[in-house]
Amino acid sequence: MKLFFRNIHLYLGLASGLFLVVVCLTGTILVFEKELEQAWHPQRYFVTPATTARLPLARLAAAVHAYKPKAKISSLKVYADPARTVEVNLAGTGGPGRPGGPEGGKRSGDRGEGRPGGAPQAKGPNGGKGPGGKGRGGDNGPRIFVNPYTAVIAGEMNPRESFFHFVEEIHRGLVAGRVGKLVMGINSIIFLFILGTGLVLWWPATRKALTPRLKVKWGSGWKRLNHDFHIVLGFYAALFLLIMALTGVGMSFDWVTKSINSLTHSPQQRPEPPVSGAPSAGATAFAPDAVLALARQQAPDAESYALQLPKEPTGSIRVAILRPGAITENATDEVYLDQFSGRVLQKQAYAQRPVGQRIRGLFKPVHTGAIFGWPSKVLALVVVLLGATFPVTGTVMWLNRLRKARKKAQPRVAVS
Image (tube, rainbow, N blue to C red; front, side, top):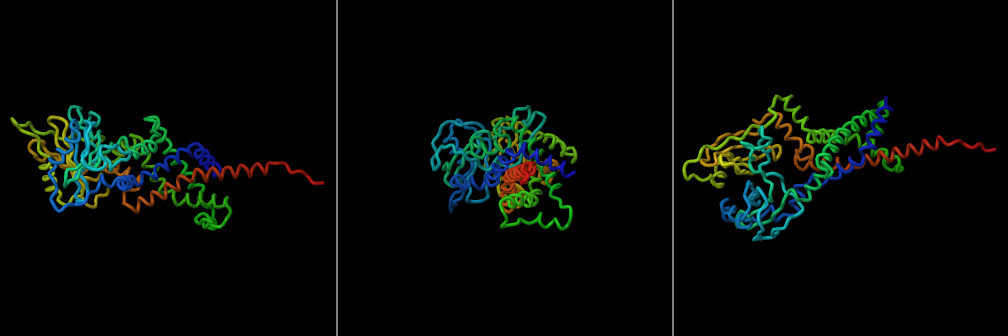
């Protein structure tokens, strides 16, 4: 029986080994994406806190419009940390502009922290669009970073043109569109079989054989070390790699999300966001500063507030509130406000979201190791680095066996 599993493990490993190395190596970069981005471009994200109060959001929005006259602001993200810039996302490419601070209008090859607000876009029967299928105005344009004390533009980037976005495209689909994502999704399923058969092959027949499978025999020859790196380290990394492979499959195929929603009796689609009431004559949209003030009333101790502005004439303002101690950056409370009166139309705490939605929201932070902060990220980095070596050490073991088998098969010449 073990020969059967060994053949499955071997041939699947040979077929997908190169893909696994690419996935693991790109994964090592994505584990610390946020930290690397902020370290490479600290001026975008951090400022020296001033003794004066922060400027109104209207003033910051005016600075963005002066910098990008044709741009339309789709969302703003404000951090409680006084040393953080305010992030302003544009709905489309703005016109040419010159910044009033460092970084200018450069397009860097790095991505920021993802969508402001953390939570996914509300989806309905129109395929992720708002009422009438017109959409809510996604953050598809550049991201502008503004000093909250001086209104100086601290930097600009386009997440879809960033280095990390390119690395993620390789990681998820080899920059080959839907076909590439399908290939990598199937590769994740293959990886599950490789890990499963590897554990079967690792399992010792006797208790005496257990110790050699748990310790690397340092000081041995390179063949023995290669064997131990594959067998011993493979066992220790297997559980974590299984979790990463499972979440990778979950992010690759829609049927996984649908199955989770069915099993947890959760809705398959997020409900349509509420709409604002009919405006009175001469009514204007609720100012972002008033929205922020209402959001702070809802959660005075929040770590961040993300304000997503409506695109439709009757759309509502969505506020995503990240509370202290949230399990992930996506674990936000949501509040929808009437864009004309500021009246709370709907609110939902993270704990009140459907179970299926919460489970699906954990896939990426678990997959990248971000679920428990630095400790889990370091663990994820070590595991994916080891994962990149296993196809190599496994291939070397196979070649050594072939060489040994050929030597045994050679006829011995009798010496007279």
